[in-house]
Image 1 (cartoon, rainbow, N blue to C red):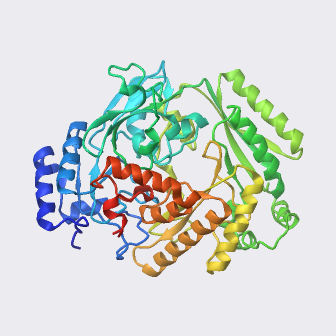
Image 2: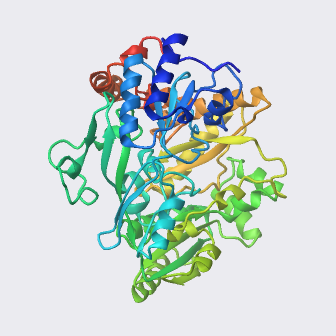
Image 3: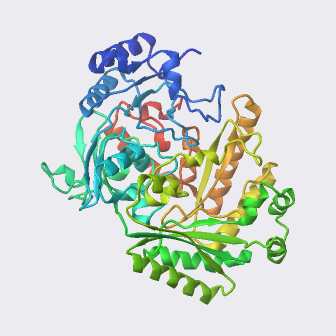
Length: 540
């Protein structure tokens, strides 16, 4: 496969730029051979080996902020676009592939210093190459009494995940990783270095403690944006609690989801619980029982008929697992309060204390805990979900995520099931959200309705159908008032189109700023649907 050139850059110009970058950071850190460059290809590309697939032209891996500045200045000189990535895989959301074919990947994983961790003031300052495993290891080795909030899987970058608005599992103020960030160091598109918030004050002592500083708050431009390259970030850490209780609530009827969600909202918004994990035993059973699976996609059934399906099998219709953190007696009191509160609205609910841990744990105890991300321990167990098994004998080559943001209510979940069922019927494809599909409670103030669409490396027709389904779902979601949380780069323009209030006033505003601060269109053209003027008229 011939590697693509950046649009508007000829071969001689590109080679000169790569040579100059090699002189700046060392030739061993400039990758121009196909075997090296294709490692940055999206392993789960929904356009694998098709003309639409987004491919890089080269990759460079600086080791310091100063080297990033040198690369950015060279890129401006030769008008070579850059696509910064941190560490991890970003599987299902585009991997490390750029938004525009021919872009040079700027790989920041060599910048892997944990600059500071404070377990009295509860923050860390990290570079882009620091993974959740790295930060966790640093905390354990130094016997610090703080937790990270980590997503699945743990190989991702703390900084990069926050910039992409990743989410975790503990209390809301920590598991919204962008909300938990505090202070950025950024290389701007002209190569200049800027610090935001209190970091703009030379010698600031509260860089990672007070995010706003003085004047306009600009950090949001660098989250899912393309206004600079973040080289340091502060992030808030959770103090290690004395106790963790995992409590499960089970309710018998489909409509019980409405009061159950209302109660969980009340508990979470008053900081009594962490991320709620909603589920349905019927959904789990559907992978093994063809009859239950068929019933799940029969949208003509009434609530009473669906309730009978669960009752016949001795199952609750819904369950929710609630993590409780705090001093030992407080955690126990919260669990008692939860049971009392739920019984007031759903008398038939049942309860089980599924986990009860006191801290600190040994490494062996932490590794043995099921779903240990709830206590800030990173892992890779999430990959067992799609692995070959009795109920999944033929796993796909990969997947892409469809993830709409819904109002946090039971009524909204039922409405979304109808919206996507109708979209599937109109398109003539199998639906992906059965009528017992649970909402995801990762977001701190909204639901995410998320499922995967399959990817194949050998069947382009299947990938074409996946792309068509994704586009149709995004459009249907937009009409219903739902927007996407994230998306692979191939679909950033589509998702951006949905956010169209007042003739796309938001996009026009950000593109005006893009042209002002990045006139050569160097940093991640097309990311977030923001194209610089250089490419806007005829997007590559």
